[in-house]
Length: 314
Ligand SMILES: Cc1cc2nc3c(=O)[nH]c(=O)nc-3n(C[C@H](O)[C@H](O)[C@H](O)COP(=O)(O)O)c2cc1C
Image (tube, rainbow, N blue to C red):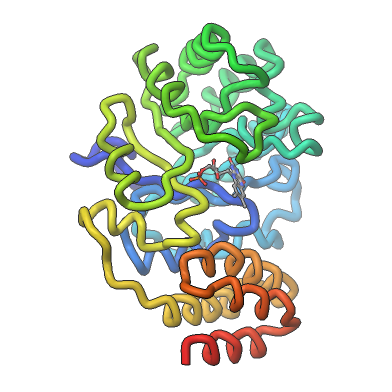
């Protein structure tokens, strides 16, 4: 059982939930590197969690292993009863906290009223959050975008509504629903959210090196920071933020270790796709890494990829 996420004397560093990336092998790699205080699963379908097939799901691989740090299960759904059941199942499987996804902006998600789509029906959102709070006796949070249109007043009302439902913290990724990753994250919205008071605020968006990480962590208006894409291109970033400077990086070892973990813990049919997705981001920080990425992307088996990695780092 972990203590309160915010109880230590430093602001916690969160690994962002990322679909098809923050599976067990990647989380284990980051745990081995060190620096992350709180882990997230990738978003998990509430329907799937609430169904009887859950034990077979690739998304839950590895949850049974002992952890050094808390792991939050992120739920994606819109039906209150299904979400409640999914939250209970998650807790019974050992989740250290539950997060409701209010940020996914993929059209097939938000147009169905899930993810960021839930932000558009305030009454329903409040009902779901209050009901979920009643069944979650551990950390309960939401991770959100800031809405469909830029409207500060409306955004602040939204924060008040969410806070009043009793969540423990709110992760704000300050982009509009339809923006994808266009334009910079509006960190001033994170400060506005904090100005409401009475709820912890975690800031997320565009932290792409440790200087930025330290700067953002030290902002008065955040209680913690969350990092997504840069955690893949620079898995050492959490450690660097903690240590206040660049750390030694062994890209070849880390790449091969990741592959080893994928081989060990993911079912074969998912291995190639998850390695390719990781490689796309991981090679961004390697000099001439795009050549390696192109080679990996053409490969159709893991041995070939390993050979290409070894050749590249010769
Ligand atoms: C490949 C990918 C998958 C993502 N999947 C999720 C997800 O499952 N749940 C979620 O709340 N956000 C998801 N996000 C958004 C990230 O958690 C994060 O909010 C966003 O990338 C901004 O943070 P960053 O600038 O540090 O990357 C995803 C982002 C990426 C790039």
